[in-house]
Image 1: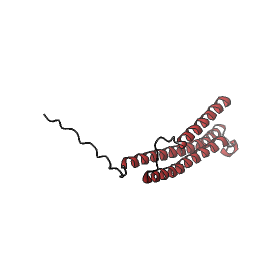
Image 2 (image 1 turned 135 degrees about the vertical axis):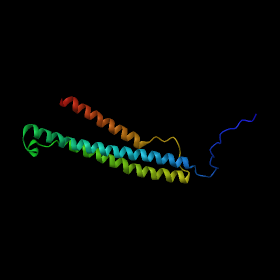
Image 3 (image 1 turned 120 degrees about the vertical axis):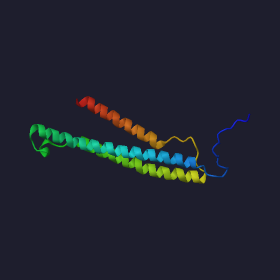
Image 4 (image 1 turned 90 degrees about the vertical axis):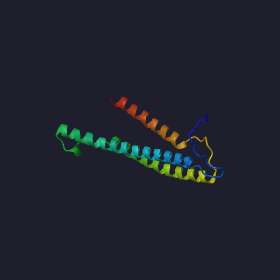
Length: 139
């Protein structure tokens, strides 16, 4: 009795470019774009949160919003997070172009640590630590 096996996906011939590698690079690129967009959205929310608090304080005290002062920390940290999102997206574009060129020329070597990911994770950890310290010391 002969056993039927499922057809195996065709493997690229030597010298051919495997499209799955390019698709993986594109998926990574799109993940970085989502990360940058997420940072920009969070930064916008942080910046606007200070405005919300100022309006809330003005409503409670029945004073004009401009008389309650500004919450500069919220505004500037929000702007900084938005700018970080922009830097992440620009870096993602440059990195994607570089990887595709290396893949096309055959110069790409596996096993490299993503410096951008390590830098972003370290920066976000430092920001999180600073926020935790601020919250602990202010309240």
